[in-house]
Image (tube, rainbow, N blue to C red; front, side, top):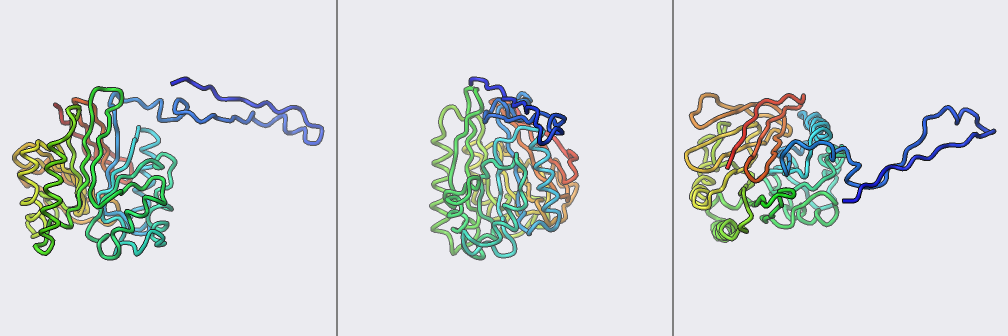
Length: 320
């Protein structure tokens, strides 16, 4: 990319206001990726994103503090996009794409310059309590909100490397109850086909859904968790899904059950719930507000858990 230097404009002496000559020279920056703060924040990874869930509470329950820390972190670390893992609006979703909650819980909370990137989002159970498709329609209004359908996929290039990330965004709300079996079967067929037909360049497969299939939170053995596990475990193993990323539990977790897939839970965007220590498949759990930060290239996937004060609670790295 051709580099553009900034342009300086020097004020001349003014007889009307001689103090102007003492003012600092104003600087006008041309629009260019080369001049962005992000351009200087190389860390050796090709792609970076944040993951956040269960956040939409009008800034309360430390939602605003987490948002401010996300903005600070993004100003100091490359952030290509944000993933929202559902329960975007409490208590009962939004009634339309014009609902005031878009401003109270999203636009006026995640205001930092470096959070004005794409937000790839999915639906949580609370989002279903009003008009879930309003969040799809909002994609036509907002520059950053990205939800083209209730489930969808994206292949994202790993920078200039010869490799891609496959991001598969699913709607776990339809995988739980017997009444939704026809829709569940259709979605699971789509999920398996999408994973099977990934391009040869795909190095990492990440599936994102709201409900976890393993947890050490309050839902460790409840019906929802077991239903999601039953629906997804075989597909994950057959298709070698590297990461399942979810929310629903209001905490930060890294779990490694038997098999290929790692489970990360990032549902600590506002209200917090408890976790249980000492479970055999748990590598990390924290009942603290915060978010997760993912960095990856063709051979490494690094995950950090950051709390609302900016402390890194946990870090791990998966390798190919």
